[in-house]
Length: 336
Image (cartoon, rainbow, N blue to C red; front, side):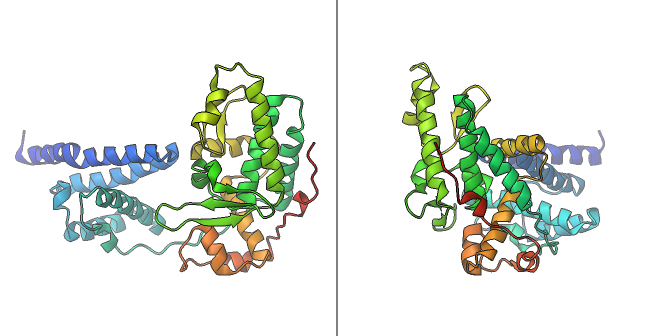
């Protein structure tokens, strides 16, 4: 083996023994946080780019020796490798998140990646679900909920709960997946509480119909529980699970709560079945336009979105007249 080959081999071994071990812990933390499979896959791809940089440059790859000079070299490496500023930005952001993980676990005292100047970000133009498609979705879920098939009716009302929490409350799938029963405040002016990991909790108003939909949802769940063998999952659900939602196939409940990916699958199935433009993100963007038309203060909208005060809503306001949304189709509903 030549000296150069041995050096390269030693670098690869060092990465596997040091850097990769921390990455494995990072990926496990993402799984524990119920990040989607695609999100974790993308993080792995982005960190592999950094691993390849270390190998190609034969860098000392012990994490504790990573320094500002290495940061500058990686920034240059990305500039030369990726013509797209968004591609560079994504890889820097992933590495920044990884080093935040190391920081929280006392491996580093500060995040060195914050020294990389991010590439300019192209505006992500909102593409909300069209209002006619939203009404189609609402009518489908509501009508499906009136079926004599008890379990199908329960699933439909669960999906109606999800619908209102996204279209009326603007919740993201990551927030829905963590939502507990104690976070709902029912009554004359129902609200939902969101508890960000690094900010104070805040509440968001919901359409008054949420009271009736949620009440029907709970009653259906109780009926399913009573009509099912007392030794199965349903009895344990009320005792062990505090989540608002549950994961299920078309025949039985599988677990309390729904992962972000599980929520995305629900939307995918509805999109294909109804042939409408629908994702959790697009429905949430429709909610943001609705808030604008309801003339909520910009600072209030930003809080409900969970973004920093410096976040720009300029694109939303510029497109507001093009995207008109309301909740009038939900105003006159009677539940038997």
